[in-house]
Length: 287
Image 1 (cartoon, rainbow, N blue to C red):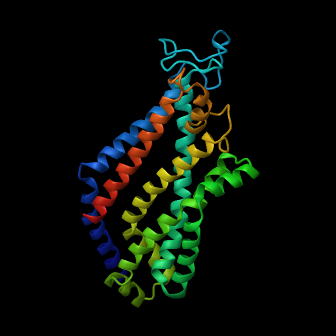
Image 2: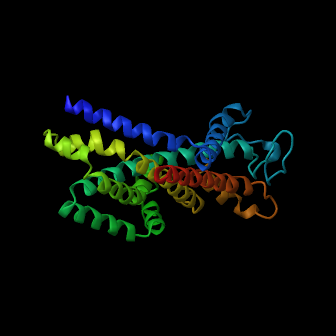
Image 3: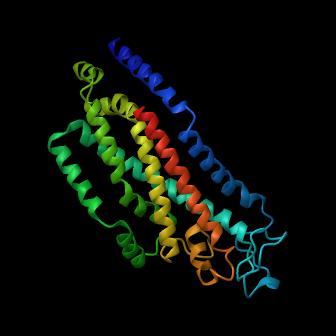
């Protein structure tokens, strides 16, 4: 009976937090912009009359300027730039979102355990987190990617292994602030174990911190994937990503800017969207 009362109290707190996330502003702007980008990269290749690797023999040799047939022109191999841009967005966003999801999951586990138990558990987990924070992410990824050409799955795991630390520290700070709450003490008094308390009471009340850390991780994952692909260590052509599209456009930067500007703009807009979304979530959580 008391357990039911505790759950009801958690639901009341969730209702009080909910309206903060519904106010218009940065949160709505970031969400709408990210949704538009996602819709474009998901639906665009399906609507395009060209395949991402389809070559036109008549257009081989050098990039061709935008036209009615090819809205963003073609590359030196006669492939439609717009189709490759949108298809590459699928890969970049998929790797970014998947890497962020894995990183947030790892960070949430570390942060929840460290914040709830404190003591030597906190010391061990946070010192390990500090060590990982001190490791320069991009050089390490370049070394590993140079030794083992990563598949998309391996790239996701590699990115996640390097960006989970922000989520761990953010979740830990929030869990430490709520672990002494009355409903946590009541759950302990009723005999609930640490695992049940963390899953049923701590994590649901840390959802705001987890959401903020997830948006931070998305931005970091997309930037890492783009940097790796640009340097030739990520997803390999002919499979397009925004990063390797920039790499392929580098020799034609002056003579064919329609090859380099669109992927750069898409990376920029995506980073703006996730950062604005993260700031909106942070404001609602702290408001």
